[in-house]
Length: 66
Image (cartoon, rainbow, N blue to C red; front, side, top):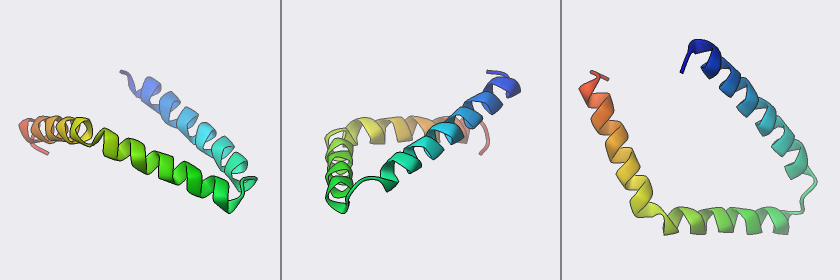
């Protein structure tokens, strides 16, 4: 991935975050809470997968002297 690719990806993430923020403003508190609970449930369901990926990231960082 080139620096240009990285910059494009970051700019795209920023645009999508801004669009999401505009959409979230229109939701009720109950709707936001439902979304947050669903996100929490998904994180818990994928806990072992997330921890395994984090362990790989730490291992790679250590190998690269970070």
